[in-house]
Image 1 (cartoon, rainbow, N blue to C red):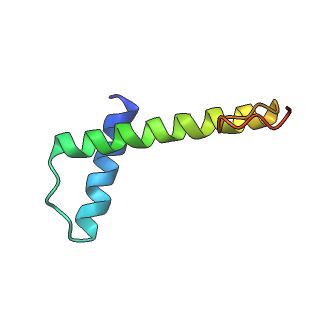
Image 2 (image 1 turned 60 degrees about the vertical axis):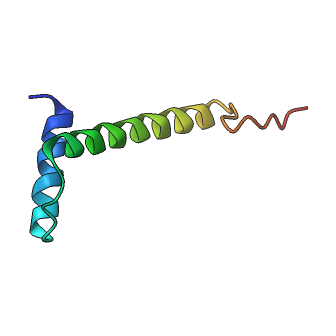
Length: 62
């Protein structure tokens, strides 16, 4: 089972515990995919910081 599907299931279970049951399986999978995209973006930003590379489009070295 793909990790995104596992996250979607965990998300569904967590939302159900809070009484939220209106999301479809497809919506949960989309949310999980978006979460992974954001995590990937954040990992890239952190890696760029480690190398001193600006990711904001703001070149401060000039």
